[in-house]
Length: 206
Length: 164
Image 1 (cartoon, rainbow over the protein chains, first blue to last red):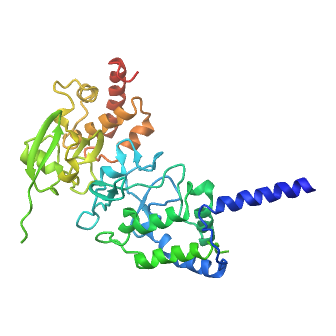
Image 2 (image 1 turned 30 degrees about the vertical axis):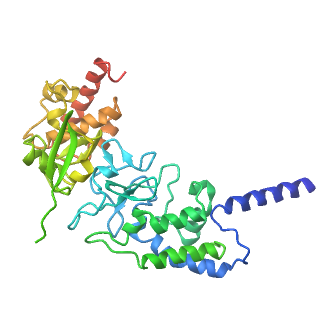
Image 3 (image 1 turned 120 degrees about the vertical axis):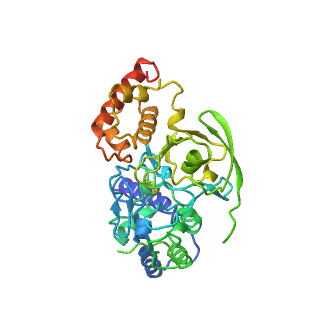
């Protein structure tokens, strides 16, 4: 019996440590209700086509307001999320949006120091190893996925906040080019809701 | 009307250092065709959909109609004219052997995509070819000959000892 309890306690401790990779350690007591409410605010953005289209359930990127596959093109994620063979994302997508409807959108790459490289495009899906699927996920499923080390590729709270605050691909959602809608919140509201979720303990909706 | 700022852009075109003074946002396609006289690369849709304008940028099969010159600075670009100087590239040999083109307009793009595919996958299966060539449209419908020619080019590559 004692052995069983010890193993159980170890597993709980390991589990808590793993979850701490996204959930912030704080001396303040967690406010689960506030965390869940904040996540539900951010969830509106996570589920918008500007985000879902590059976080698909399948192996191919989506496009448009109704998240359809790229017509005709047999696009595939590839190991690094950059596409394969002749159909790599940046073969068409450049470092900025092209002017006009139905033209390829684009975003700039980030240099090692964090500065933007306006001559090199950044356009990709998450890697095959960590696909970070948003499409079709309920709020509870998405929240748990973001916190699950086996699915989030070692994401920490700081990584997540950095991604949603500064990644040119995320920022692009608020500058999506002609004919594409923006997410329902302002970018600063979105970032604040992600921070509020984490600051309040990162509890997931039920 | 604002005046466009011209900039000097130097890149390696078909193995030779090339310098042009252009609007850095001008698409590579129009620099190749209008400024440098390399008309083998074709204009199709201008929207990165049809694949007619495919060239290699650092080995990747980019759509030159949407690739700004600012991205090309310092990079290696290969066009259909630079695939080989004597039509000896396995893709060129296979295309001639099987008389792939009908009207021919899309074929430079088809060949550049085929060469890119074979450089990364020297023995592609039909499914690999269908996937990799899905971004190159042919209104004459030469798709089956294109597929056959890619298989032939793959065998020529093996003969040449490049693939194995």
